[in-house]
Image (cartoon, rainbow, N blue to C red):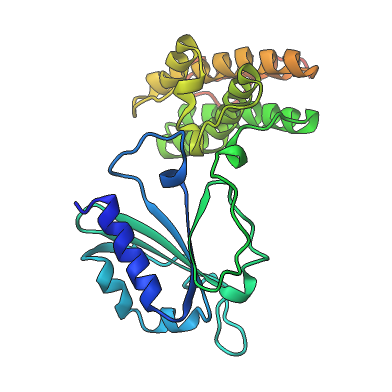
Length: 296
């Protein structure tokens, strides 16, 4: 595997040789002073270029960065060209055979002052000396922000609302549906609440990372263990236990976030939905109606 020095030399050598490239910025984890280096870190590179289209039409230049394993161009169909065939942006996500990866985004030079600046950015090359200086990189754009009351309420509502979908899917023995609801909307809300909890404990200085990947560093061991236990396998009863475990964990941390922020936690929604989950779990497989004995 080529090391960082060799990769950076290759990137900057190409940028210096190509007249159309006017500036180079690197962002992401490789410039984050708080992230431990490992061999899976991408090289997140931005080239500010005079014209994007020539680099898109003729892609032979990509070969100089190494032998390709696989490449993705997410802007291929999503970014429209203007009347002159120019792109507003174009990204090449390149995974090389030696394990290195470059996520290279091409942006028009003329838009250099309009592009949002990520706090994890370093200016590597400015041929014209026209780029505004970048402040020292930090993860300030990625720290957890405290929720507003409406945002907190929406998170709670989504968590408990979609939990009923999971119960329905498990009772019907529709594992793919149940898992999709568990791992997408419900887990997203649980992670959001855990992020707020971690932020609350840190004075909202904690950066938990994409999909909460750094949560373990910011949660009490007991809470982390409870969260890890919510990842069930494909067995129905263990998935039921994971769902109920998600509810217990969400309830605990949401109450603390609510108390800290002065919000109301939806106790009645929680109580009714939790009772429904237990009811559906015990419902016979041949049941034809729900709550037959309930009052109209």
